[in-house]
Image 1 (tube, one colour):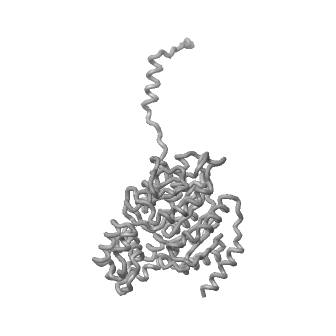
Image 2 (tube, helix red, strand yellow):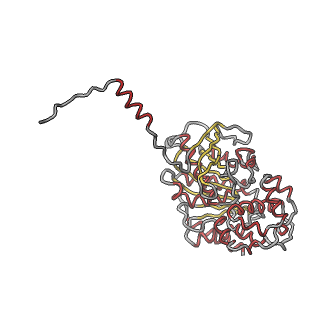
Image 3 (cartoon, one colour):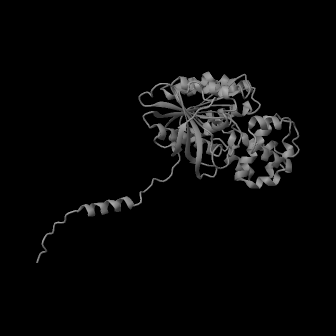
Length: 400
């Protein structure tokens, strides 16, 4: 015997109960990811480039030196006018050495060379490119900044491109981007170019990297970190050494065993003083007094240095241009020239430019070449690998 069909009416009370049940169900949140935007706010400071019509400070998710998702900060500069169809192409700027304390972050105290850096960034803004400028994780954000840890800083500058697009929307910012950097930032921008395709993901279109004063063999610094090296150094060199030791200690604390009391005191100063102040404090000091035993005697130190400082030597998907002053005493010219030559021998798409200037002067000297390279890469410019290889061979002959 079949049961009679019963028609139920949904009374207002039943509807309310159903909706209440839906409201109380926990929402499934998307997992945190690199490049997630945490917050953004308008930014004003005297060091904002003159061609920036708008500026914002962003907080975003990005890995720290341990590979753990953390918080980073950075600035977003926009050119004048409305975005073009497809959005403003992006220049991701990686700054040079500032220091390792939070108050040394460019978004906190400004660039170390504000007028020079402003001139350099203005040329990109004037051409209608947006500029993003990461502080690097742990510099002005929670955690410790691992100075010259190239993989971390490279990820930081890629993630700021993602966060900026989350903030403005994909119609305002183009997926096309390049990395540009000087000194510490040169190594970061170079490494970002190597990681860009795999780490940046399909939402971004990496087009190339332009770097100046790029450190490509910093691991060799270990050879001068020994007690009998009593040569007086320029203050900036001593500051770089102290910053580097602080970073290395974060990942290899056993290094502390070869430090002298003087070495530990300098690292402590490095944690408080930005580059200008620390360089003045340490002017004329030597490296050897920081050590009781050569750094090279720390077990496994070369693996630590390569993992921490090593820049990629093959596997670039887009062209690079390395620019360097042949009077550079902070980052030796010859090391970067030889690095570029090695890339060429391995068939990597690299160009090299040199100028008769020191480390600080390279950014101004290379500005025109940098703009030409970026315009070509963000447009449809061709990269002539054969011509660049020939030019590099000539420079190598001149260096002999």
